Image (cartoon, rainbow, N blue to C red; front, side, top):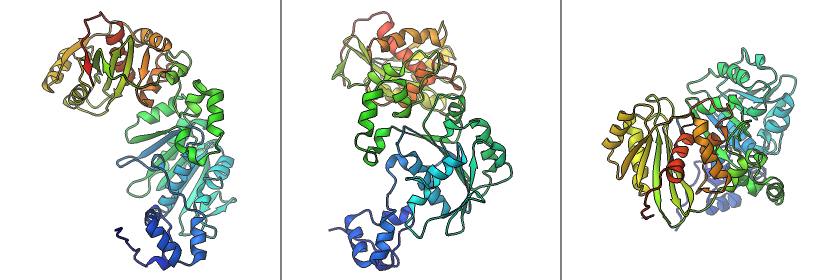
Length: 439
């Protein structure tokens, strides 16, 4: 039997306003009781604005200061940002909305089909004051509106929270974001949400690498239930497997000019793993400094002349013992035949910390004698030949691969380096007599 929990004021007076309030109505029993006992005019008014965020439209767990939502066209980015601002308006008084232009803020972020006003029932919606360029909520909270075309307008105002939409379409993204952050100085925990379809620009890569930034990746298909039935299938038939589809539908940061790994090859390389492998390795690209760059850790297997990318467990901010344990755990999980670690940055230390973590297999140190691009070129050729398979979604890894050689990456491509070592060991190294590892 279902145990029903009644709101404090009873169902007849219950008026859902926040995400917590709507949670009361998630069970069919509670929803039925509310519809039966509450005045129908109240129910009708509230249901008109009832749509709860999907999992990918919900902020990640704390701690974070910036939530970056990277999504394809129609992935629900606007609804995610608007839902977050609506919730913030219940607790703080001063908010900021920034879009590429004033027109974009009003027509998309405020009055669009998934904008802020759409989240409220008629009679409860915030009021747009065009002359003052602000949105006024019924509880007294105010959201000031800014255009990314005028970063200097952000000098002076101050906020508790801000939502920045289509960051990659801004005229001067880095400068405008800096001005906005100087204004996020009210309250005990000022926060920023950035929603955008990604582009391979330096400002976005810098934002991704900043401490305090957490990111959500969502393709267009994640929001398919709220799109026209033929929208996704039509675009996939026209652009599937291209750089345009990778950026606009999958929400990936695609390669810039000069990149080795093509979006077309990465889109084509997804597939299922075989039941067994000739050999499995865990490749480790250690960080140069403790707590600095991430430690790249990628698991790959070989079977029938092809390499299979099985896992990317790259981590940032770990001590040497921490990333060594993480690599060893991956080796145990995938019954690896070898741990392959780059030794250019402290070879003896790398071997020592991996040995202390109790590896279940041999540790092999490798040294780079040529640059990253030269090392990656033979691996990129294997992708082009269809001889590498990704057994899962690895968006961060694929973005780094596409950035190799383009000059668009502001941080060390640790994931990509680890993958290059793993695939090189399996497919390009001196052949060994394989032994069967069954997963």
